[in-house]
Image (tube, rainbow, N blue to C red; front, side, top):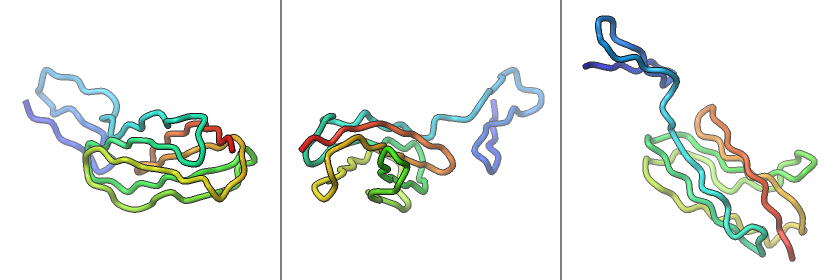
Length: 112
């Protein structure tokens, strides 16, 4: 059995094979932020199955960018990410994690 991948990361079936491949591989997973609610910092884990460009940003409920936690290229594996919110007000925030063109978002609550 031989499989190939296209430039967009989707697997394609090789003609003549008996295997059907659907969708794209799961390139990353983001663990649930903990603790949540939190004060003053919360942790997440990011697991990558390949090296990728990532961006972790925090937005308030009005959609305004509050903080850029990290940006750049990360290697495959598990990474611990900590958001220190000691300089922002109590409230609800959204942590958006982008890996390539995929987005994961989770709601967190800061209580001071």
